[in-house]
Length: 207
Image (cartoon, rainbow, N blue to C red; front, side, top):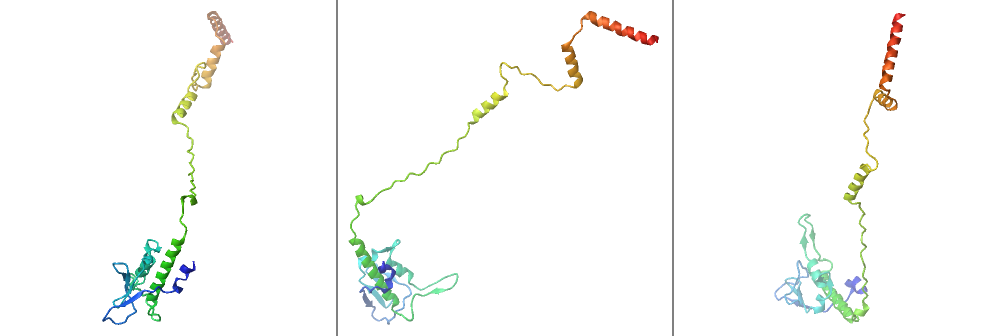
């Protein structure tokens, strides 16, 4: 853990510094790149850091190695929107980036050694836990056809009870129906009643 947290305090890996003939000594870099054979870092027009070990590319930070991350991030760039320039060079430590590359290579090499020293993982050391996703219970719905059938059955009258109309009638009509159903005089009784009414009328007129 200390190897990665305090990477800037690690010893520098002994990279070979190749100075380009005819170029002036310069520790400032604007954009680095890795050589095509992946055995060195072109620091600037004056210096190349050679003899990169293969392990430097085996230690990954995400999808690229730590040395590739340093080369990509430590460059002079200007933000187009703000106009702010990001310059990783340090005026008080002109060789800071060169030293940083050596330390990162050390961290990469040592990390690969640790990983390779770990015992191989066998299938018996791995426990696979299968989890089953809970199945959601679907809401129970009453079939539409049955609802219609039950509604129709409730509205239909039973066979043993005939349906009777329920007309709205006035008081006079209900009274006439009641009298007719309770009593219906015989033909001779109607005649006697008529004569009685006529006689009562004549008596009233005589007075």
